[in-house]
Image (cartoon, rainbow, N blue to C red; front, side, top):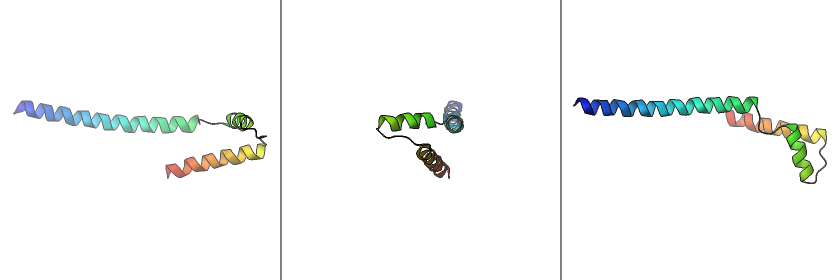
Length: 76
């Protein structure tokens, strides 16, 4: 009987550890991506020039604002 309890407690602790690890990793990645966004203005400018468009500062700002709004919508 005690062996069954040890196995059940071990499985419960394993599941709790996996769940806790998942949420901690998720929180860490969200804060990391907020501090270090994957795309910045220089990258956008380079991307637009590669696509054959002449990047104006107005267009760059508009695209950055659009991406920030998209990220904020996902959080809510």
